[in-house]
Image 1 (spheres, rainbow, N blue to C red):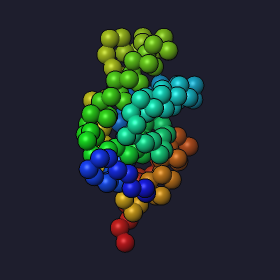
Image 2: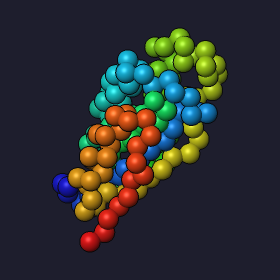
Image 3: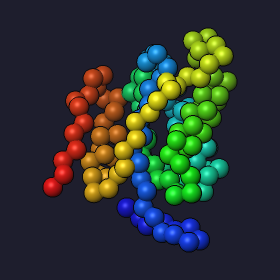
Length: 143
């Protein structure tokens, strides 16, 4: 992990974030995933203090490994990502608009975990997502 700095602080704040689609609907097909990744990268470009390390999806959820500066909350970042990607995917795909009508496409909650010494393990876990429908439960090992 790299140390980053702002005017008055240095930090290493990486997070593993996960959230699902609303009602756990399985609409993240390969072509939707491709567009979702494109939109995520466009959004990250707008925020110079966010760094995206890994992203992957299942058919009904998304995993991100992201670095967030200390001047912005994790909840705020998740809100921005969900709002932006919801708007963009509904604009691009008519079938998603039909499913969700006037509501967002993501579930209300999210999972957040800090990334430290197990960074490589989390990155491997994220890259394995979508390769099997029901992945084994992820376990952290602390040594």
